[in-house]
Image (tube, rainbow, N blue to C red; front, side, top):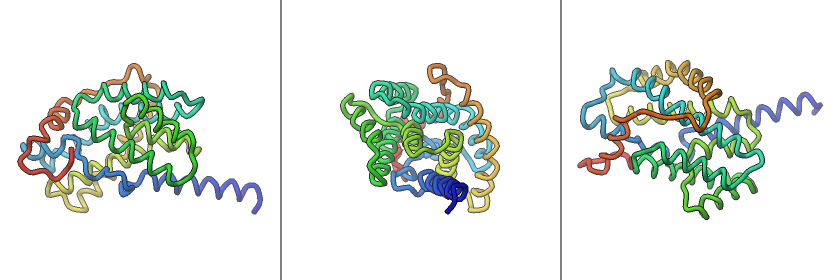
Length: 236
């Protein structure tokens, strides 16, 4: 295999591995969380006709925030500092007012890095897990995804796009289980949200970590009220 062929092969392998890590079927429990959506549906605040606007608004707020933190995790892999890693995750915790959402994100982030550890001897990923354990902090999914993908030498823009796409896929999957949303409508939702994913990725490129915010009060209240639902399909 010549140099160009070898280089092309490595790029294709990297792309396929990124697709695997961004697959909603990755065994980290993402499909068990609605992050407040189940409450909103149970209270009839959300109907199938509301979903396109809800998805658009979600990416304009929560999507941008999570993309910024995904980038922060990615960049933290360069000259890794345990203190900086803990600071990134603690800052994202502070921006998540609902305990249920924080706990859900922490479960996903921890399981994601543990899954990555089964794929190879990635010492930096182990260092990240140990740093948060020592600090008594949690690991959020978005910076965990960024950090692991940097360790695996994926390209930053592709990483953010992949992260946001799996976020959209998980939301659409939740819609399907909570509402009368068929396969065709679900496919169309995921198809139509792709321009918003690109816009969110571009917006996150110039947004500083210390300046990012998120205003989704209805989802936050929905997450807080989720444990009080009489019947629940999701953990959060």
